[in-house]
Structure formats: C-alpha cells, structure tokens
Image 1 (cartoon, helix red, strand yellow):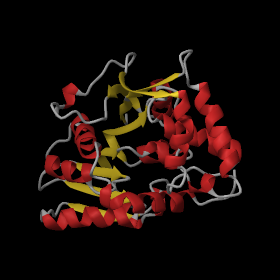
Image 2 (spheres, helix red, strand yellow):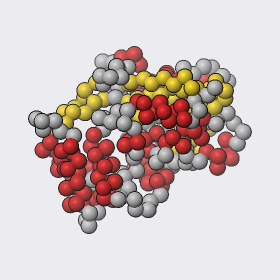
Image 3 (cartoon, one colour):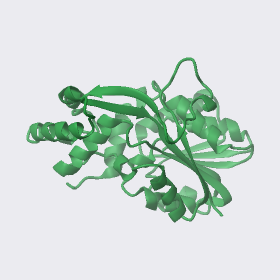
Length: 293
C-alpha cells in the first residue's frame, strides 16, 4: 500500500463532512447505540470517535449531572460542531479532546482514568487494526464495565466496500477497513481476544424510516438482514463517477490511475451480481456489547 497517514486521511474526510454529518440517519443510530449501552446516572463514559457529539450528548443526558463523558475525535471540524452543541445546551459534564482513538495512552487527560462504559459509534471500520484498538480500549474499562461498538454487514454500503477492494488492487489508500469484517463472528472474536466477556451481538437497521423511531423497531434478525436497495450491474460506471472524486476515494480519481481504477471497479462490482445482473444491498449493522471481567 502506498504510504499515507491514516489519521490525517480520516481527519480530512470528516472535516469535509462535519457540517452535514447530522443530516442523515446518524443522530437516530447514535441514540440507539447509547440506549444499547444502558447507561446509568453517575456513570463515567468514554465516547471514542465522538464526531459531532451525537452519542456524546445522549450519554451526557443519561448519566446526568453527577456522571461524566469524555469525547475523543481526530477531526477538528467534527469537534467544532460538538463544541457548539455543548455551549448551546449549556452542558457541563462533558470534555472533548482532539486525538487519535488508536493511541489513547498518549493522551495525558486519560492517565489513570477508567470508565463504566466505552462507546465507539460508526468508527471501528475506520481503523487498520481494529482488534488492537479494542484491546487497548478495554484497559480503560472498570471491572464489570462494558464496551459498545459496531461494524456494518458485508452486504451493506456496497459502493464503498467496492472502492476499498479497488484501492487494494491499485495499492492506493481508501481510508476505510470494512473488509476486516466478514460477519458478526469476526467482531465477537476481536472482543474476546481483547479479554472481554459476555459478548452479545445485535443486528440493527440504520436507515431512517419516518414512521419508526424506537430501538425495538430497528432490531433485526441477525440471519435475515433487512433488504434496502437493489442495484443493477450496468450502474457500475455511474456509481464510480459519482463517488471517485470524494475525499475518501480521491487517490483513485487521479488522472494517471482513474481509468484503470474504473475498470477494476467494474470487475469487482460484477462479482457482486446475481444471475439476473442484480446487486442486492442490505441495511444492517452488527453491534457488539462486551464486558471487562
């Protein structure tokens, strides 16, 4: 893989998304992640990749004035949005830090701290070595504390996953690592290898449906994820052209590699098609809840 700085790449991607990040399903999904964590008044919470503060603010309300939340994110743009929310709502039990979530030991403000719960919402797939990250995070849990993390189903976000495969074949960085997870057991294994126990995996739908709001309405059967979209094999070129110049895939859009990258994208896209030339995407995220013994 060509040399790149993963933290810098991710920071740039999310700086670009900061102002519009909340205009999506993310607010509702972050709230559901906090509900899954079952936070209690007075607890201490660490929110990793806290972004615009979606889960942070929900956690702050759940632990109330005698609890506390520490939010950490690499993106200055995302943290600026979170800071505005804290100021607007006059929230005093939250502190924010700009830092990589993969080297928490280098953040002095965390020295000696342990937490009742650790949240990492929609971010584990951004890490090159998610297993090592979870292992480090677990050391910041109090005995009996729990961690809540999520990864997407391998048949979700198919254009993005296809771009990752193109990046690998072109030896160019695409700063997402969804290919680390082939299913829920990969996430379970990472948690267990980190020394965590009582690992429970939930299957949760992400995409908003206007008539539904409660967590129970978004829980799905882990073996039968909710279908959400059907693509056609012939859409490959349009999908490539629509996304290749974005901040996450910009290396594949450079003039000297663009046509080769498009050819590889079409090849990888074709591998996803059924006999009728249809490519079926699901709406499913695997959420792990695991405890420190």
